[in-house]
Length: 427
Picture 1: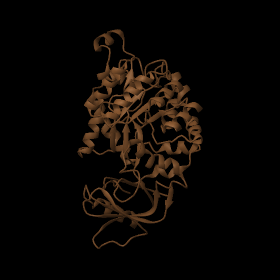
Picture 2: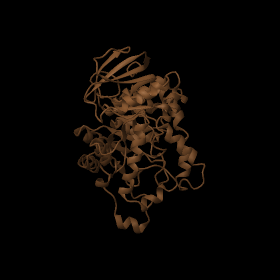
Picture 3: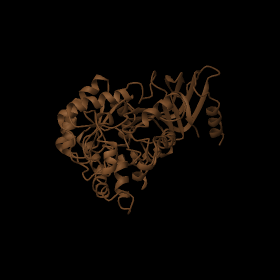
Picture 4: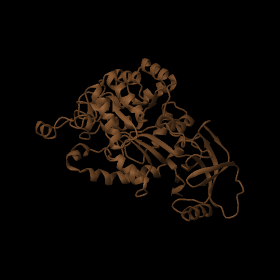
């Protein structure tokens, strides 16, 4: 009790941004490079960065503020590489698209972002949503609390594809809004593809997301048919490189995945029907895999409930969702590089850490699953200042009781969160 009280007092006494050195005394430390849990360490944080990492409970100059994390393992803040902070699945999701305004989604997103941060996720890659670039900026400006956001903005699709915003509209509405084009993220040629990427740059995106195949929750029959030519995807990838962007490809079907990998995308998301040939190509091209097992299990479960999904969606959710965990197991055994993502927004925000449990159920070692959300995720993002607890890196540090490598269920108990040196959660 005295330890908890002392920890709470130490945390609440800190300023919003700790410019003076602060020492975190961790009983254990997860080394994301080796995947090992080390013994007691002291992490010194200053100006939002990790100044030093010292073995044991290091003696520091008098007056140095300290946070004692007895009984806890300190880890780099986690990254979820596939979220949609502007929404959350419910039986009302489809009708809400006609009733709610963008500002309604924005207000909801503020709460979703805070839940995500409180769960230990100090960074996310938001792969599709008009709200996310604005939420990113509000968080960066300190107006609201949330994870660091790498925002895709509007996903790029083809006509009738998974991210075509006019899917499901009746003739009257279709004529009213007109056919969407590259500005709205819908393409049908190589030139369109280039324009769509340039529009995302104009809109302030950080990453490009394409829907290389049909999807589960879109109002369309096919969940796996390929929806781009190789040349169209290659035009997206090449143009994205001009702006320093990586490209994430939503894909369920084998042919769409194959085209995306051959065209040079950075990551395959979901990958439900991934074949041995696609796995070989991904290893050959260095393509990352983000399984999103949580979303697959969630939609398969909800497909059993009458009325949760429209009838055109329900069979896709039942058939495709249930396969993702087995695909992740095969991909890990085959040596495909795996990084962490949940597709939250399909499932409830703040429950992201349950993906770790599903990864371990699939036969992925706990240490590898934790690396997937730390050092692997940083590689996918193309950044080198996060994902590990080392001097000079961002002070994104979380802590939880127990040892998550020994018992992966410990990931559900995060009770300390620091992002850029600011404490957002303490016991």
